[in-house]
Amino acid sequence: MKVVLCLFLVGFISAAMSAQSFGAISYTGATINEDFDSLPDSTTDINDFWLYDNGGGAGSGLLVQRSLDDAPGGTSGWDGTQLVGSTDQDFRAVTLAGGTSSGSVLSAGSGTGAGGDNERAVGVLSSGSRPPAIGVEIVNNSGAALASVTISFTQELWRTAGDAGSPPPIGEENITTAAWSQTGAAGVTSANYLSVTTGFTVETDLDLVSPTPAGGDAATYVDGNLAINQTARTATIDFTTPIAVGESFFLRFQDFLNDGSDAAMAIDDFSFSATAVPEPASLGLLRISLLGILLSTNRRKR
Picture 1 (spheres, rainbow, N blue to C red):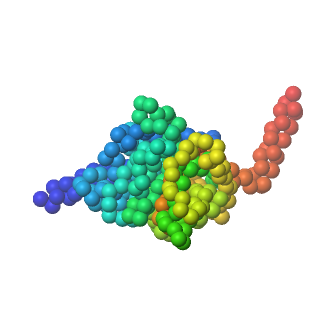
Picture 2: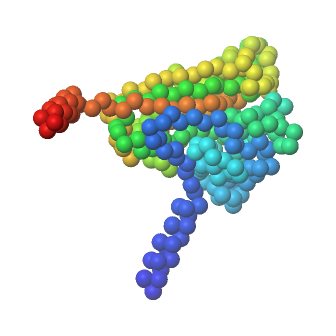
Picture 3: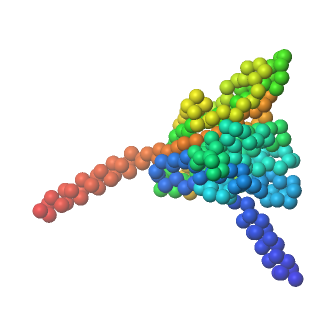
C-alpha cells in the first residue's frame, strides 16, 4: 500500500509541475532578436490563459508564472505573471481603441482579430489589485563564459498615464522597473524569477517610463507603433562573475501601481548579444608557440 501511495504522489506532483511551463531562450553565440509578432492579436485567442485564477482555472487560486508561449501561436520564449492580489488576471490583447483598463500582461498592437495586424509587442498595464510582470530567461549555450551582455529594444506607449483628479493633480510619471539576475543569485530560479524579492539588480537604463500627465488629463489609448510614442532603450551589463556555459541570465520588468490611472507600455524589437570572457594571455601565447613549432617542422621536412 505504501509503495502504491508513493507512486501515486510522485505521479500527481509530476503532473502538477508539467502543467506549469516556463519559457527560455538558448543563446548559441548569435544575436537574439525578437519582434513578438507571434503573440495573439485577439483576446479571444487567449481566453482562459490565467496568470491568477480563483475560479478553478489554470491558477486555481494561486499566483502563477507562465510561458506566454502557452497562448496560441506564441514563440517568443517570454514569461508573464501577476505579482500580488486575489482577483483573476489573464493575458490580453490591447489596441489603440482600448480593450482593457484592468491589470494585465498585454499583447499590444494597432488592431485585433481579422481586421487587425500582426505587428505586436509584449507589454504591461498595472491596476491596484493586479500588478503584472514580464521577462525572459536566456541560457548560455554558446560554448564560452559570458563577460557581458548588451540589450536593446523599443519601448512603445499604448495608453497614457492619467491624472486621477484635480485639484491637486495626482497623476505621475509611470515607471516599470527593469532588473536582471543570473544563475547562482540568492533565491532566483526559472520558476520564480519574475516575482522573487532577492537576487536582482535594477537596470534603470532599461526601465519603461511614461510621460507625466498634466492636471486633469485622462488616460487615453494611443498608437504605440507611431514614432512619437516610441523610445529606444539600451544597456550593456558587465558581470562580476561570468555566466558559465549552461547557466542563465534573467531579465524582468515589474509594473506596480502608480498614483492616477496607469500607463500601458510595451517592448518591441528586442535584441540580446553577449561578449565572451577573453582567453587567458598565456593560452594565446602557447597557441602561437605551437603554431610556430609546426611551421618550423614543416619547413625542415621540405
